[in-house]
Image: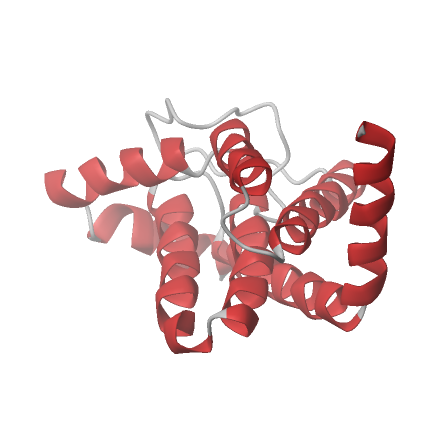
Amino acid sequence: MDEYFSFLIYSSLRSSFLDFFASIFNVVFSFPIFFAFLLVFYVVGINKKRFVVLFSFLLSSAVTFLIKLIVNRTRPYYGNLNVVNMSSSSFPSGHTSAIFAVAVILSYYYPKKKYIFYSLGFLIGFFRIYSGAHYLSDVIFGAFLGWVIGIFVLKHEDKVENLNKKIQEHIK
């Protein structure tokens, strides 16, 4: 059933318009580029809670990586996947877990913009399926995992901030 719905999204919605946006989303929200953006975000100091955002991204990435090692689910292969490392595990979607973890934090700090943050998460998840990089369940679980990690980080925000202070002291 999972494969059926994933292939349906991949095959029935094909268009040059969506192909264009899929390639942009898959590149811009790849781990190295997204991490670099968050690192600059942290260093430049756009937000006083910037370390919490960066920490949620790193924690979701680490947890997702561990789950990928344990589950080791083969990625779907529907054709030309030049944006996907086929040797990496499919479950859960790391792109989706990372963006949802960040979306939870940013939605907490900027509640009026929460629809933008969650819409971005939804689009990233959709484009991961559309690109043939993930099954639907990979993305759904990735979104759930990111949401749980975001909530966890917010509940322990004071400890995360203390970690940031310790890092800042060691840097100086």
